[in-house]
Length: 138
Image 1 (cartoon, helix red, strand yellow):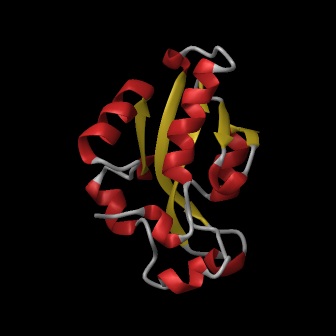
Image 2 (cartoon, one colour):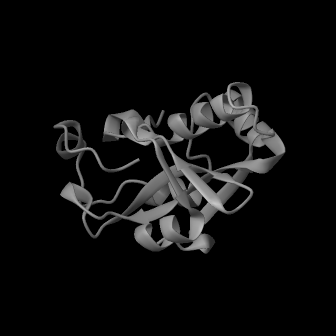
Image 3 (cartoon, helix red, strand yellow):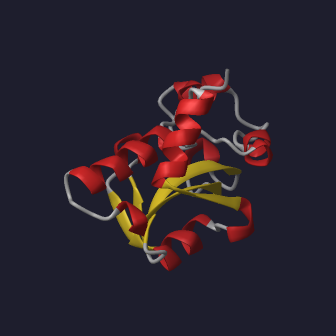
């Protein structure tokens, strides 16, 4: 089974648990949150210039929360998408309930879309590159 932590990232898990915390601790409505899986372009380290899979949370389609790899980023969606060169056609969007069901059904945090899964980790990267502390993917 695919496990994104083998590739140096925890973005899918962080997105799901981050959304759960936004609902339970910060009392945000689950109807306002979406878990997004998509492809981004790396800005530094071993992923610089590479397209790879990533996951984040969106609030009302305008604000992005990215809690992956210990981050606590909160940005306007427009800024986040521009910085990561995100193409919305390369994203899959889930309600919190859909993400919960996918996680339970598949037994992992994602990505759940086969098309994204095939492109999640670029061929240019090896597990050893990412597990040497050069986090960036996911």
